[in-house]
Length: 235
Image 1 (tube, rainbow, N blue to C red):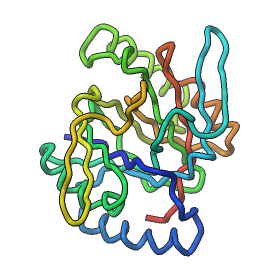
Image 2: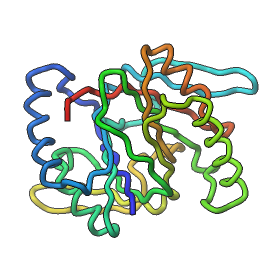
Image 3: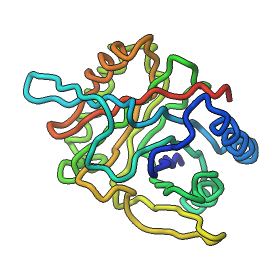
């Protein structure tokens, strides 16, 4: 079964390309080597200050730069685990280096399409949805949205490298490690009105092209797509 481990916290202080960032990568490389085949995807993301948010208002597409201001914590990266159950996913999440100072939201996925090693032209679109508008899996509304997402993927074609949807936010578990102790909390990491309900990983030659692709992702009226460039870390 696939689980999304979303790394959430205050914005990263070590910028991609800096010596501090490179030093941190060594810890993640060791984690990934130990986890092995249990890792079915993942990426480090450029800072939220570089984000682009896409919403729809009627027939209009609204694009805004920068982080979503209502969030106290931002997504700095993610992993997808392919494991037997939640206990195994939690055991992996607690070993993510960021668990020592950030929150790791572990949530079961409805489906996941694995991706290759991300490159310099890779992006992710985090799909945010209002809690009030969340759709239950296997409902008629879910089937309708799944059909629309299939049409989107067919239209965009090879640009899509991976993606998946999530189970409802009440299935989430927050993992933290403080002073060597594992701390678990039920529910999503964000206390705001929105939660992540899926994501795409895709390629684009420029921010403008990435925005154009993300603008075509099917969303409910109050949903938004947060576009973030993926850091090319080489593993």
